[in-house]
Length: 548
Image (cartoon, rainbow, N blue to C red):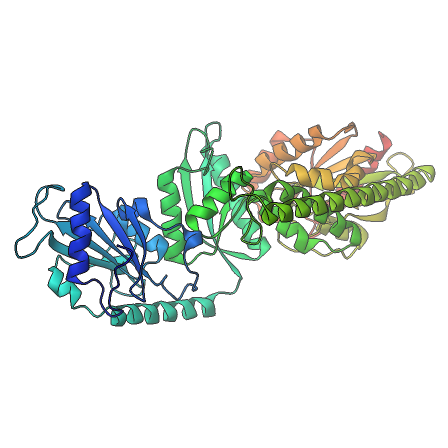
């Protein structure tokens, strides 16, 4: 079959189709031949189009406005239109066309000779632009493909292949240009959530909504969300094989260039998913690290972010990208590629060791500053809380610090320390205390971040008291309280008194406010933006310091 050559303007000649059908009948299996636009057979596989599809990473990459330049001619025993699995494989590979040859006789029983030879009828399928009139699925969403009624082999061979491909690519290019004009953000993201046993539906939806906020903060545009419920994650691809095909089909349909999972992925899972889908895959931790890299402003913040990124990257070097060969265990897998990988690994290990030394020096420097404040008997209070709870806004309201604030997750990373005068709870004399705005927490804070930011988090462990600030306007404020408390319990030497403060009370209804007051009667309620309750907060801070 590899020695066959087709005219460039012909989808399939009768001679080629009959030859392929004869081979399929002889072996009793479906056969697929993949042909490029020069008419050369580049791949022949035994099985249906789904089983023989070319891996996405091996396909030519022409951009979203082009097809792959490859068409597939396949045989099938039953006289029926292409099934959804074959059509999905066509979409994933962005094939120029899919031709299905229905064989004569029952099954693969040989009925050669006669007027039509081995082929009874043919079907021609191709990708369909989303702006065209398409068949509708039961759910009402448009199909990304179109296929013809059954036709004879003679009619198929007379189709102008180049005219079909050029008209399709012109339509896809118009869609691509329109999409680029409308796009305001670089990454077009498909979110994937996996709900496993032990996770409630409310927690799952909250985590998926939080991932959408993280992607938006990182500068991505969320196009769609996909969900799957499993007893436990698949060891190789997190989701099942059917869901992987659905993800790949959705990526091609909506034009996504990035897939973000709501849970952490192993290096092998990322590689397997990227190989099967053909676009970049990231997990929740990688999205958070990207935000940290954008938000770090000071030298100390950039230092700690780089350390966290390198520690995350190190186990993911093998097979990551085309420039670095994979490690192997057989003939043809050893050589310069492995040497380059090991060189990169050693370089990263040296850089990590150097960064850890600098973090230790930063840790010692902040320890000396804390020691100096303690010698001056200046009490310190660290403001902790979930990200976007309003910690920086509160610090600005109490101290006029002019710290950058925004309605975003992790808007500020670098800790800011300011002095504020409050009335002593006993003598009512003005007393100076130090307030420190710390990095925001998040559910399941990545361990690499905890380790890299240990110098910053020591501001929490060494403070005389903590102010735990909560965003009362968030729908999952109770879960956020539990998440922060869990992180604080995992930190060593957290024995300081903690004052619970609810922020953004101007954005909540009376029922939510009463519920919070009933559950936490000792808490203080403020609106840092509008200045509500700040005087009460100062008094409670004075009382807190007196008990230290």
